[in-house]
Length: 79
Image (cartoon, rainbow, N blue to C red; front, side):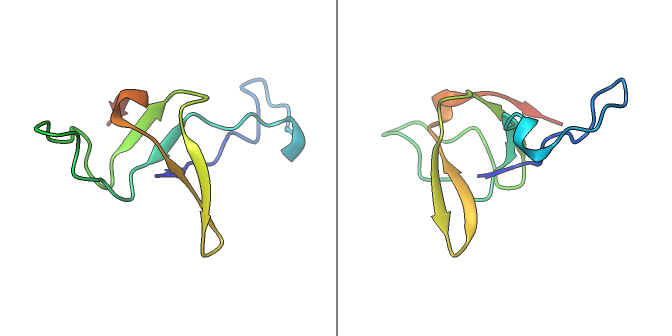
């Protein structure tokens, strides 16, 4: 999964510096594993999901920051 970019401006119009931005808790699914034992995965590649703030493990693959997380760490799928 790759993390989607955070907001750079507040609803009232204040522009946030990069250091003041909070990492967003939503991302785009770029790959899905086989699932646990006899349970099929509920998410699909290309979907946007909300996930737990401290659930994912961050990894760097060829300069691209990706997140590894279990399906239990996903709150919901956005449409």
